[in-house]
Image (cartoon, rainbow, N blue to C red):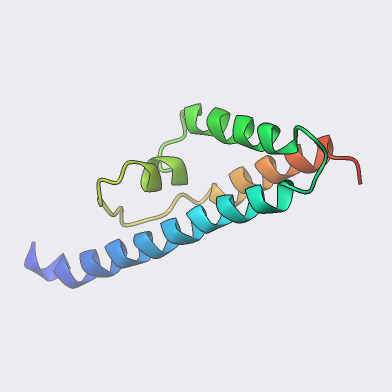
Amino acid sequence: NMANYPQDLDDKRNLQTICAYWDDFHACTLTALTDCQEGATDLWEKLRRESKNLDFQGSLFELCGGGSGAAPSLLPPALPLLLAALWAALVTWLPF
């Protein structure tokens, strides 16, 4: 539908921006973990792999990992909860 075309373009650009931040987040995390206790990087990668396997429709792994370029109209409302759970698991494992 041509009436939705400008919105679809905005959604696609927004998704590309969010996915770039998502990729940067993972790169930054791995860089930060390099100086941490041995095994922290491996734990992060394990959490990331396990999170990809969750049956969570609309996750950033699903939205950003496929490279399909499909832009949904809404981002998942539970995304901050998923990221907080990942971070909490990592922080719990690392002694400060």
